[in-house]
Image (cartoon, rainbow, N blue to C red; front, side):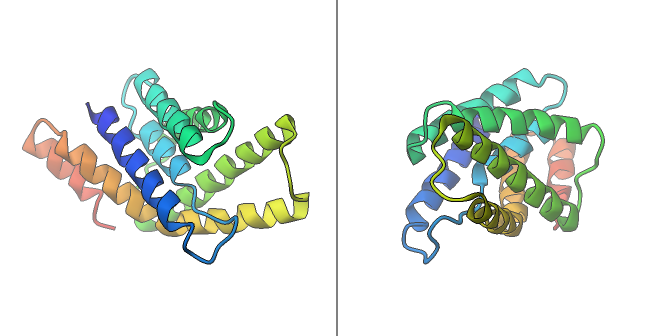
Length: 177
C-alpha cells in the first residue's frame, strides 16, 4: 500500500507540474519530478527491490502517457533511477537538506541524461548537443530546488503507513530539513 500511495503522490505531482508549467515562462526547462520519486522509491526499498522498481516503472509509464513520450521511455529511466537509488541507499545516509539537494541535482542530471540518450537513440533529438546540455543543467538545478520539498512529501506519506508510533517518529525525524 505504501508504494501505491507513493505512485499516486508522484502522479499527482506530475499532473500539477504538467498543468502549471505551461503557464510559466519556461519553454523546455522543467524539474524532473519523476526522477525524484523514482530515486525515493529506490532509497526506501528495504529488503526487496522488485516492488519499488515496479512502482517506479509504473509511475514512469503513467508519465509517458501524460507527457506524450514514446511508451516505455520514461518507464525505463524511472526503473534505472530506482535501482540506482537503492545502490546509493546501501552506501550513503540521506539526511539533511544539503545531501538531499545534491542527490536531487544528480538524479535530475542522470535522469535527464538517460532521457536524452533515449531520444538520440530513437532519432527524436530536435536541438543541438550544446542546447541539450544547457537544458539538462538548468532542469537539474530546478530539480535540486524542489527536491527537499518532494522528499518531505514522500516521507510524510511513508509516515502515514508506519505501523507503530516509534516507526512514525523515526520517519518524521527525517522531515526536519
